[in-house]
Length: 215
Length: 215
DNA sequence: TATTGTGAACCGGTTCACAGCG
DNA sequence: CGCTGTGAACCGGTTCACAATA
Image (tube, rainbow over all chains, first blue to last red; front, side, top):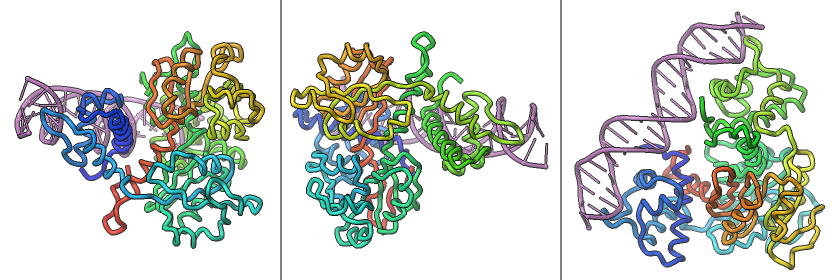
């Protein structure tokens, strides 16, 4: 049982969403059946995924929404605040900087960086854009854990190297390129253009000749 | 050989990127070995992925970059222009609307929609925001194939239903919720907050006790 | 009785070794 | 001779059946 399948981690995130919705709707209890139906996953799969981490239900009764939700938040590391920096204050970086949803989450935007002197010093949301030269000291002083990588493709690897050198632990990369980081730094791609290209694969083909079978 | 693994489709997108970079750098020929090294995939895997679709190389010699690139573009459905609408002109929708990279790609932004009368009529990039009431006629008239779903979580399912009813074939969803669509409409999630939560899973744990093993 | 938790069977994707061929 | 293309072996994730238990 050494290593958890990546697919399981992804589904845990989905289960957490469903449980959060349930809790807000006042639902107290649920079952692997119900949870699976909402998450589009089999009840077997729900139970197997949870079994990697412990036993959270009551046989014959199911799961308590609040309890299971708390456990999933703990498993996913969402019980403490995460300090986040934005690397690259182009349009996407700016859009993320005043994304209001972060206010209610465990993610705290602590800094914003750009190489362009014309952008440095500008206020965006309640951050002031800082030059990349101060990245190492800012990361250390404000205990920054994670970064959004929102620089152009050509700058992505250099920016990643700088983040790694500064001591960042994880990177959410929006760059439309493959960036490489050492094993102790996790890179999670959120890739607009890759998603778009996968989409065309599944959608193309004429309406007559059915599209390539979905995965 | 009925259905292609989803992972293969994702890797084809990566191979295409690598080949595009190679072509721009003037590299004429490559091999499954080299391609795999750059894409962080085994040479076996590269050859197996390609074998689902045909035979594109020359035994003993390898692959011609231009040829393989053309074939991958064809396989992924990237040889014709795709007409795209943006649904939801909040910050993210606006950021996408003047994302300059689309100019050079096969994706053409053709329309932007919002429910908010205060936003309708505004010009963003070279689009004018239109009310959702005209969605069906606009989709039909401008032959719109795909949509970016950039509405708040609470509006995501209703917006999806509207897009489906209007005849959209594929949706790139940025909504932090699970949206459901009929089988003939493909939904590809590009999920910021899910990515962030997967990231914390892999990063959390003390520096002493090693983090959960990566997938 | 109802539903969880789990060892075993199954299946599909990855890895491999090598046959095919330029 | 070198590298692709591919049938077979392997492995890991999913599915399943059922034992455990509130």
